[in-house]
Length: 299
Image (tube, rainbow, N blue to C red):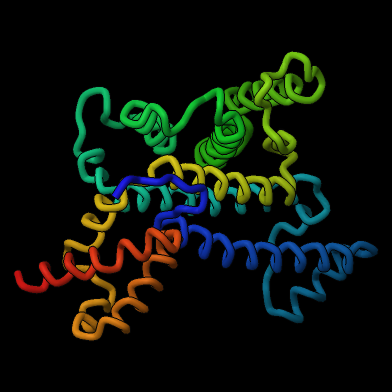
């Protein structure tokens, strides 16, 4: 069947990413509400009131002076960014495993192989542009590459947090680059390309001035980049089905092989949840999946 790339297509790795980010977003939002509520309550007499809160909840606070420091908000956000980046890294790893060509990519040598210091997202984009030159275009996909540049900034934030504990020159220079891009799009729109992004290009705050809004921005960028990669890397349907269902992992479908109605229903559910295929694609896929699972069951 001829491949029809649709914006809605996704891989199972994207489903997992959205679920995990959703769970983490809720935790961060609750944490942020609790911190802001505490800061508001102890505003009058911070030392005394914080001590009372600490005793009431039996949680010792050793560095309470940070609660009134501007850097506290930035420090919290740095922790938030670190966790979101870990989710993004897991997505990139899972995405490659979801691809029919994933094993070949991981074992590749030469120009296709991932460089020692190459970020995984940069490697995925580079190899995609090399093998699927029409899938991602820097001029046509300016929104995507703007998101990638913001993602890269937060990757540098993560690196600075892990290794230096402060803003690095590389991080500052990269933010200057983002600010220049913002100027080209907003301050000097005449200098911007004709296909400038439809939504505003937001420049993240500096390392020591990060805010909760930066966490929101990073989460949105991660999901946007992930969704675009799924669309760009969508394989031909027959190739995808063979990769997924010719192996031993059949997610409960095999037990319905003798019941066409239940098999069709279970298969439709699985294809919708994992890949968000169109109705036409699902109708085509069901008998193909059944043949693949039947053949695998006889081995």
